[in-house]
Structures are given as C-alpha cells and as structure tokens.
Image (cartoon, rainbow, N blue to C red; front, side, top):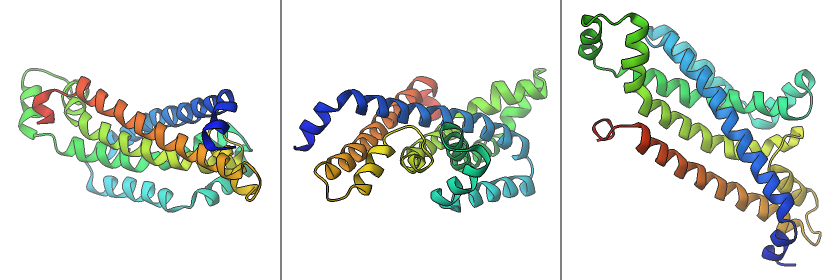
Length: 215
C-alpha cells in the first residue's frame, strides 16, 4: 500500500488526529500568551525582573521534552492535562521575551503624551503600550506555535492527542507493512498544519497591525 492509499483509507482517523493536534497547539498558545503577556507586563520596567523571567522561561525550554513529560506524568497523569502543561511551559519564552521587548520599545514620548491628556496608568498600558507592542507579541506567539507543532508530537508519549501517535506507532512497528506510511502521514500532517497556521498568523498580522506600524 502506498502513502496516498494509506491516507485515503484512514482519512477519518487522520483528520481527527490532525484536528486534535492543531486544537491542542492553538489552545496552549493562547493560554501561554495570556500568562506570558501578564508576566511581561509585570516585569518589563525592571531590568532584574525581566532578566529573571526570561532566564526561568529559558531554563524550562532547555529541559528535553521526554524528561519534562516524565516529570509531569506522576503529578498530572497520562493524557491531555500533562500535554497542556508541557506545551504551555514550552511556549512561554518567546512570548515573555517579545512582550518585554515590545513594551520596552514603546517611545516614552508617546506614553507621556497619553498621560498628558488624562489617561490613567492602566489606560496607557492597555490602550497605548500593549497596542504598540502587539506586533512583537504576535511574533512571539507565531514562534511559539511553530515550536509547539513539533513538541506536541512528543506528547504522544504521555498519551496526548494529535498526530504524534501515528509517528510513534510507525517507529514502534518499524519493518511492518505500514510502518513507513504511519510515520510519513504523521510527519507530513504536522508540516502541513504548521504551514497553515503560519499563514493564519500572516493574515492576523495584516488585519490587526496598521501599515504604519508594519512599515
């Protein structure tokens, strides 16, 4: 059986796994964005705080995927919970770093002008600083999403959802009739989904960032 026949015969299963894969990645990226932006907002005015937050997030990223999943399984068990925790932790670094860079890069004259017309500190942050930092935050989310597309494959080790189960099954059954088809279908699925999501980010950037800021 060639690859196209394999995909055609198992399309229902593969499409469901692809949907679960991309859903897990998108949801975890959103959760990481909320946490990462909040952390970035809390520390961006402090050099020590920014360095500490970035260092901690960097440390998490250096932990091998299998090792982190192995540490989480005794705590949260097998399944989606462990997958979500791991993916969110891995997604934090680019989002925190880009939030800090974006907020720190806002021209002080702009914030001074906003305060001069009577905006509160919260108003300046939400209506001026975060809007100007949004392109950087979005770029961090884009990087995090691409990272998680690959890391989510490893989550199959913890019985997580997605296309990783196809790849693991193919590797575990190496030499069998469909082992190569299993591994290839999972791998190609991840690549295609990653390209689609990257295109979505390009569209979001065009829709939410003004030409002046993009330029």
